[in-house]
Image (cartoon, rainbow, N blue to C red; front, side):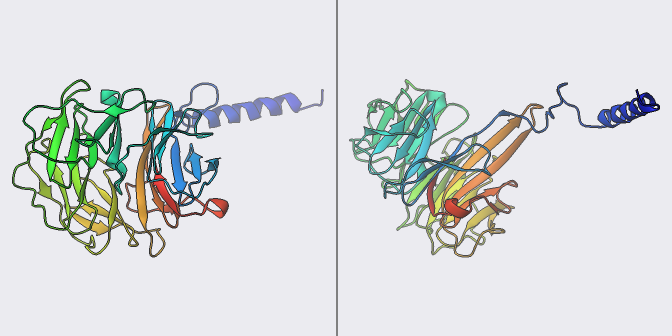
Length: 347
């Protein structure tokens, strides 16, 4: 053995021990619990040619279904099934490798919540060309039937156009045509009218769709004229969010609440994203290219081994996929090269 080698090794080992003791707590096998994801998300996006793309980290993307020339209206998942709506609703049971049509009687609307997966009811609801306008699947999208569970003495004519649910296991259905709201308090309960007081002032030429977070319902005018309203008491009373900078001459394509309460992002046609700040909308286009149209939004969460949670907002735009790590205050572009496409759907 070379003279002096052993003392040098001992000194180096002591230095390494001190260094390791100053690092973040790990799980004992050299893996940082602040960086190991316990429950990863899966993001699905599709472009205007029908190309379906997937990412499990928001930074790397892979194509999983080839373009067929038809842009999807929406994507959603239920259980292990992946559903994509074009003219008809199609289902994949193998992560998008192939799809089969499962429902053809769809009534189309231009917003994501015309179909809604609600795990609390173990049901997917979709707008359909049926008498009341709702069809339902209770097997994660494999089979569908008209939802016939309704209270008696309903209004004479209406047609449901969007859905959204709350954390108390109640799902709501709204008819924009008739300005009527209905609620279903459990998977086996009837749909019944939800009383809406006079706060919600609907103007002519508006077309509202529902979105929600765990405790707040939102009605957003797709036509960009009637404003955005919210209710914190299950659709009884409504308050209009201050118009602020939100433009009235563009379609408001999508809406998403990133932080609960009355936090809201609205994606628009050609003028990017707007965010609620101090009760009114402000521009939230930092990082977006000029003339960005935002078609869909998706909220994803990474939960780490130390139970820390990091939330991301993704938007599908005509300029690619963007991500925000600060609830929509600023955006980073995530798709480049072959993936730099015009995306119409995200989930």
